[in-house]
Image (cartoon, rainbow, N blue to C red):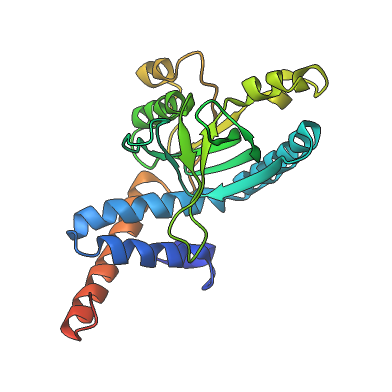
Length: 253
Protein backbone atom coordinates (compact mmCIF):
# COMPACT_ATOMS: atom_id res chain seq x y z
CA UNK A 1 0.00 0.00 0.00
CA UNK A 2 3.04 2.26 0.16
CA UNK A 3 2.58 3.53 -3.38
CA UNK A 4 -0.94 4.71 -2.64
CA UNK A 5 0.19 6.64 0.43
CA UNK A 6 3.06 8.16 -1.56
CA UNK A 7 0.68 9.60 -4.16
CA UNK A 8 -2.33 10.65 -2.11
CA UNK A 9 -2.25 13.01 0.86
CA UNK A 10 -4.55 12.40 3.83
CA UNK A 11 -6.96 15.10 2.58
CA UNK A 12 -6.99 13.97 -1.06
CA UNK A 13 -10.52 13.65 -2.56
CA UNK A 14 -9.71 10.00 -3.35
CA UNK A 15 -10.37 8.94 0.24
CA UNK A 16 -13.82 10.54 0.26
CA UNK A 17 -14.66 8.80 -3.02
CA UNK A 18 -13.56 5.47 -1.53
CA UNK A 19 -15.78 6.07 1.52
CA UNK A 20 -18.69 6.65 -0.89
CA UNK A 21 -17.83 3.35 -2.61
CA UNK A 22 -17.81 1.56 0.74
CA UNK A 23 -21.14 3.12 1.74
CA UNK A 24 -22.80 2.13 -1.54
CA UNK A 25 -21.15 -1.21 -2.29
CA UNK A 26 -19.92 -2.45 1.10
CA UNK A 27 -22.56 -5.18 1.04
CA UNK A 28 -20.98 -6.80 -2.04
CA UNK A 29 -18.44 -9.60 -1.96
CA UNK A 30 -14.78 -8.64 -1.61
CA UNK A 31 -14.18 -9.51 -5.27
CA UNK A 32 -17.08 -7.37 -6.48
CA UNK A 33 -16.07 -4.51 -4.21
CA UNK A 34 -12.49 -4.75 -5.50
CA UNK A 35 -13.71 -4.07 -9.04
CA UNK A 36 -15.43 -0.87 -7.90
CA UNK A 37 -12.37 0.21 -5.92
CA UNK A 38 -10.10 -0.42 -8.89
CA UNK A 39 -12.13 1.93 -11.08
CA UNK A 40 -11.89 4.80 -8.59
CA UNK A 41 -8.23 4.12 -7.85
CA UNK A 42 -7.28 3.96 -11.53
CA UNK A 43 -8.92 7.30 -12.24
CA UNK A 44 -7.25 8.92 -9.24
CA UNK A 45 -3.78 7.66 -10.19
CA UNK A 46 -4.25 8.83 -13.79
CA UNK A 47 -5.34 12.34 -12.81
CA UNK A 48 -2.33 12.73 -10.51
CA UNK A 49 0.21 11.49 -13.04
CA UNK A 50 2.48 14.51 -13.51
CA UNK A 51 2.32 14.31 -17.31
CA UNK A 52 -1.48 14.02 -17.22
CA UNK A 53 -1.67 16.98 -14.81
CA UNK A 54 0.29 19.02 -17.37
CA UNK A 55 -2.09 17.89 -20.13
CA UNK A 56 -5.16 18.84 -18.07
CA UNK A 57 -3.66 22.28 -17.40
CA UNK A 58 -3.00 22.82 -21.12
CA UNK A 59 -6.51 21.64 -22.04
CA UNK A 60 -8.08 23.91 -19.41
CA UNK A 61 -6.25 26.89 -20.93
CA UNK A 62 -7.38 25.83 -24.43
CA UNK A 63 -10.97 25.59 -23.19
CA UNK A 64 -10.66 29.09 -21.71
CA UNK A 65 -9.47 30.42 -25.08
CA UNK A 66 -12.43 28.79 -26.82
CA UNK A 67 -14.91 30.07 -24.21
CA UNK A 68 -13.57 33.60 -24.67
CA UNK A 69 -14.03 33.32 -28.45
CA UNK A 70 -17.55 31.93 -28.01
CA UNK A 71 -18.43 34.99 -25.98
CA UNK A 72 -20.80 35.91 -23.17
CA UNK A 73 -22.36 33.08 -21.18
CA UNK A 74 -19.73 30.47 -22.02
CA UNK A 75 -17.66 29.00 -19.21
CA UNK A 76 -15.26 26.14 -18.58
CA UNK A 77 -16.21 23.08 -16.51
CA UNK A 78 -13.57 20.62 -15.27
CA UNK A 79 -14.80 17.24 -14.02
CA UNK A 80 -12.79 14.70 -12.06
CA UNK A 81 -14.70 11.47 -12.43
CA UNK A 82 -17.71 10.54 -14.55
CA UNK A 83 -20.43 12.48 -16.24
CA UNK A 84 -23.68 10.58 -16.71
CA UNK A 85 -25.03 10.01 -20.20
CA UNK A 86 -28.75 10.12 -20.81
CA UNK A 87 -31.26 10.40 -23.62
CA UNK A 88 -33.17 13.36 -25.03
CA UNK A 89 -36.41 11.48 -24.28
CA UNK A 90 -37.61 12.46 -20.77
CA UNK A 91 -38.56 8.93 -19.66
CA UNK A 92 -35.64 7.10 -21.29
CA UNK A 93 -33.15 5.23 -19.13
CA UNK A 94 -29.62 6.49 -18.53
CA UNK A 95 -26.98 5.16 -20.92
CA UNK A 96 -24.43 5.00 -18.11
CA UNK A 97 -21.19 6.74 -17.28
CA UNK A 98 -19.03 8.68 -19.72
CA UNK A 99 -15.32 9.32 -19.28
CA UNK A 100 -13.09 9.26 -16.21
CA UNK A 101 -12.28 12.96 -16.34
CA UNK A 102 -13.15 15.77 -18.73
CA UNK A 103 -12.98 19.48 -19.62
CA UNK A 104 -16.01 21.19 -21.18
CA UNK A 105 -17.25 24.51 -22.49
CA UNK A 106 -20.84 25.05 -21.31
CA UNK A 107 -23.50 27.71 -21.63
CA UNK A 108 -26.62 27.48 -19.43
CA UNK A 109 -28.34 30.00 -21.72
CA UNK A 110 -27.76 28.31 -25.11
CA UNK A 111 -30.59 25.81 -25.60
CA UNK A 112 -30.07 22.82 -27.89
CA UNK A 113 -32.49 20.67 -29.87
CA UNK A 114 -33.40 18.60 -26.80
CA UNK A 115 -34.49 21.70 -24.89
CA UNK A 116 -31.45 21.46 -22.61
CA UNK A 117 -28.52 23.89 -22.41
CA UNK A 118 -25.46 22.96 -24.44
CA UNK A 119 -22.09 21.55 -23.35
CA UNK A 120 -19.24 20.52 -25.65
CA UNK A 121 -16.31 18.26 -24.65
CA UNK A 122 -12.91 19.90 -25.14
CA UNK A 123 -10.89 17.06 -23.56
CA UNK A 124 -11.85 13.65 -22.22
CA UNK A 125 -9.93 11.02 -20.25
CA UNK A 126 -10.50 7.27 -20.26
CA UNK A 127 -8.70 5.05 -17.77
CA UNK A 128 -8.43 1.29 -18.18
CA UNK A 129 -6.50 -1.06 -15.93
CA UNK A 130 -7.44 -4.22 -17.85
CA UNK A 131 -6.91 -5.35 -21.44
CA UNK A 132 -5.91 -2.87 -24.12
CA UNK A 133 -8.64 -4.22 -26.40
CA UNK A 134 -11.26 -3.28 -23.79
CA UNK A 135 -9.68 0.16 -23.50
CA UNK A 136 -9.99 0.74 -27.24
CA UNK A 137 -13.61 -0.35 -27.27
CA UNK A 138 -14.38 1.90 -24.28
CA UNK A 139 -13.16 4.95 -26.22
CA UNK A 140 -15.22 4.02 -29.28
CA UNK A 141 -18.40 3.35 -27.27
CA UNK A 142 -18.08 6.58 -25.31
CA UNK A 143 -17.58 8.59 -28.51
CA UNK A 144 -20.68 7.08 -30.12
CA UNK A 145 -22.74 7.77 -26.98
CA UNK A 146 -21.89 11.48 -27.12
CA UNK A 147 -23.89 12.48 -30.14
CA UNK A 148 -27.46 13.69 -29.71
CA UNK A 149 -27.53 12.80 -26.04
CA UNK A 150 -28.00 14.64 -22.80
CA UNK A 151 -25.82 14.23 -19.75
CA UNK A 152 -25.40 15.54 -16.24
CA UNK A 153 -22.28 16.57 -14.37
CA UNK A 154 -21.70 15.16 -10.88
CA UNK A 155 -24.01 16.89 -8.41
CA UNK A 156 -22.34 19.42 -6.09
CA UNK A 157 -21.72 18.20 -2.56
CA UNK A 158 -24.93 18.25 -0.57
CA UNK A 159 -27.21 18.39 -3.63
CA UNK A 160 -29.30 15.47 -4.85
CA UNK A 161 -29.13 16.20 -8.57
CA UNK A 162 -27.44 18.29 -11.23
CA UNK A 163 -28.80 20.14 -14.29
CA UNK A 164 -28.90 18.21 -17.57
CA UNK A 165 -26.98 19.43 -20.64
CA UNK A 166 -27.16 18.45 -24.28
CA UNK A 167 -23.83 17.12 -25.58
CA UNK A 168 -22.83 18.93 -28.75
CA UNK A 169 -19.68 17.89 -30.65
CA UNK A 170 -17.10 20.64 -30.23
CA UNK A 171 -16.42 21.12 -33.93
CA UNK A 172 -20.17 21.40 -34.64
CA UNK A 173 -20.57 24.02 -31.92
CA UNK A 174 -17.64 26.09 -33.13
CA UNK A 175 -18.84 25.83 -36.73
CA UNK A 176 -22.34 27.01 -35.80
CA UNK A 177 -20.87 29.93 -33.88
CA UNK A 178 -18.47 30.83 -36.72
CA UNK A 179 -15.44 30.24 -34.53
CA UNK A 180 -13.63 27.82 -36.87
CA UNK A 181 -12.76 30.72 -39.16
CA UNK A 182 -10.87 32.68 -36.52
CA UNK A 183 -9.70 30.31 -33.79
CA UNK A 184 -6.73 28.73 -35.57
CA UNK A 185 -5.73 25.19 -36.46
CA UNK A 186 -7.97 22.11 -36.52
CA UNK A 187 -5.96 20.84 -33.54
CA UNK A 188 -7.16 23.81 -31.50
CA UNK A 189 -10.76 23.12 -32.51
CA UNK A 190 -10.94 19.35 -31.89
CA UNK A 191 -11.98 17.29 -28.88
CA UNK A 192 -8.77 15.76 -27.53
CA UNK A 193 -8.91 12.26 -26.01
CA UNK A 194 -6.43 10.65 -23.65
CA UNK A 195 -6.28 6.97 -22.76
CA UNK A 196 -4.34 5.90 -19.68
CA UNK A 197 -3.78 2.13 -19.55
CA UNK A 198 -1.01 -0.38 -18.71
CA UNK A 199 -0.24 -1.03 -22.40
CA UNK A 200 -1.18 0.89 -25.56
CA UNK A 201 -4.06 -0.32 -27.76
CA UNK A 202 -1.90 0.04 -30.86
CA UNK A 203 -1.71 -3.51 -32.09
CA UNK A 204 -4.03 -5.77 -34.03
CA UNK A 205 -7.71 -5.72 -33.22
CA UNK A 206 -7.45 -2.96 -30.61
CA UNK A 207 -6.16 -0.41 -33.09
CA UNK A 208 -8.81 -1.38 -35.66
CA UNK A 209 -11.63 -1.12 -33.12
CA UNK A 210 -10.81 2.49 -32.36
CA UNK A 211 -11.92 3.43 -35.86
CA UNK A 212 -10.78 6.31 -38.02
CA UNK A 213 -13.21 8.72 -36.35
CA UNK A 214 -11.59 8.43 -32.90
CA UNK A 215 -8.15 9.91 -32.31
CA UNK A 216 -6.68 9.04 -28.93
CA UNK A 217 -3.45 10.01 -27.20
CA UNK A 218 -2.01 7.26 -25.00
CA UNK A 219 -0.13 7.49 -21.72
CA UNK A 220 1.02 4.46 -19.67
CA UNK A 221 -0.45 3.88 -16.21
CA UNK A 222 1.63 4.55 -13.10
CA UNK A 223 0.81 1.06 -11.85
CA UNK A 224 0.95 -2.14 -13.84
CA UNK A 225 -2.16 -4.30 -14.12
CA UNK A 226 -0.86 -6.66 -11.39
CA UNK A 227 0.03 -3.77 -9.07
CA UNK A 228 -3.41 -2.23 -9.55
CA UNK A 229 -5.09 -5.57 -8.81
CA UNK A 230 -3.08 -5.98 -5.60
CA UNK A 231 -3.80 -2.43 -4.45
CA UNK A 232 -7.52 -2.77 -5.16
CA UNK A 233 -7.79 -6.11 -3.40
CA UNK A 234 -5.90 -4.74 -0.38
CA UNK A 235 -8.19 -1.72 -0.08
CA UNK A 236 -11.37 -3.76 -0.58
CA UNK A 237 -10.23 -6.21 2.10
CA UNK A 238 -9.77 -3.33 4.56
CA UNK A 239 -13.18 -1.95 3.58
CA UNK A 240 -14.90 -5.28 4.19
CA UNK A 241 -13.24 -5.51 7.60
CA UNK A 242 -14.46 -1.99 8.42
CA UNK A 243 -17.99 -2.91 7.34
CA UNK A 244 -17.97 -6.07 9.47
CA UNK A 245 -16.72 -4.14 12.51
CA UNK A 246 -19.41 -1.50 11.98
CA UNK A 247 -22.08 -4.19 11.78
CA UNK A 248 -20.88 -5.76 15.03
CA UNK A 249 -21.03 -2.35 16.70
CA UNK A 250 -24.51 -1.71 15.31
CA UNK A 251 -23.25 1.28 13.36
CA UNK A 252 -23.82 -0.06 9.83
CA UNK A 253 -27.08 0.88 8.16
